[in-house]
Image (cartoon, rainbow, N blue to C red; front, side):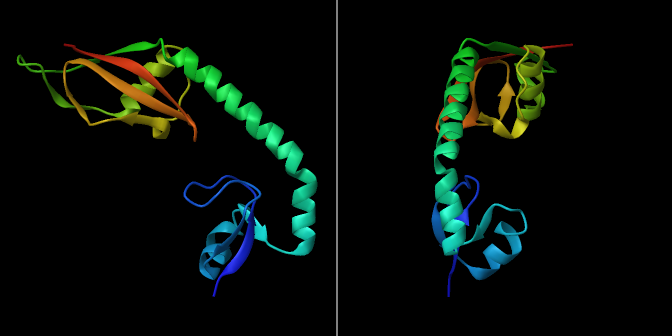
Length: 150
């Protein structure tokens, strides 16, 4: 048996705000409803959502445009991270998303470390590429230079 809900926010792997979805009753009762991510689908709730739909679409478009602009600014960014390394260029440890987020903050770009994507852990010195998820439809790529420090 499924429960019909109207999503109030975009939820990855489920849907976007305004969608009517069938979900497991426990998922709705224990996760979506207490966090106000969804409301039970009733005729009144559907009417309220339809009245707000234009406003939500405008907000979604403005968020996408802002993310695309921020992504264009990030494309030119090159961050340098100093890490302890041996003579052959192998690092003692690895460069993590937290290190990358701190380096971006040093360049004046405030990014949550959970949005930073690395293809694989960085364990040597050299030049690498990283990405930041700014929006479900926008990923910005940038360069990471890892140098031996100390």
